[in-house]
Length: 206
View (cartoon, helix red, strand yellow):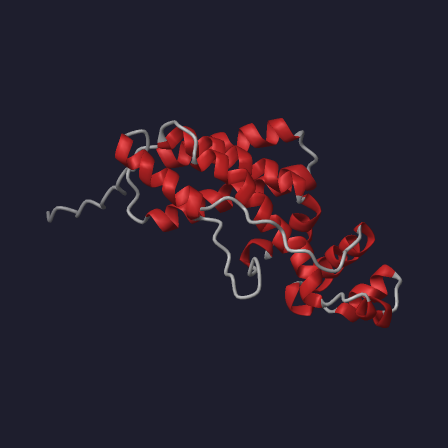
């Protein structure tokens, strides 16, 4: 993962429009997000937004594009830092929680933000750092080798992200307590030895 590119300039999306866009996402999801509904929620005329160069795509970029850029900026120092795979995975999960805090209203409104293209024609790639940390941990012995590293990274990412969102946004846990608890649980699941399911003993004939 490379360092984040400079953000492209475009029509400004003010905080009121951001909130209106998030409200529409909470109401309808990304599939139902329209400029008309955002204008209605935000108390503005659609024609005014259109004349300002604002479109549905610009509104999505203001939220999802900045989420992706923030993610790259957050993970790049960890990807280039020293340490074992376990240490880097730990820092990555902690940083993911901090990232979510910075975008918590969006995360509470929809669970689809991480699934959106981060720019036109650019699919999301949020698992890459965690795949790398797991592979490095398997190589250096700090983490067990995963049968499917992509699936393991997917599980780790989502096991950290959504419980953290819920604890912070619905239960109002303090950030540090929620982060340390969630990361500890995820790491315990990753580092725990895998035990095979006991087979049923066949009943001996009498």
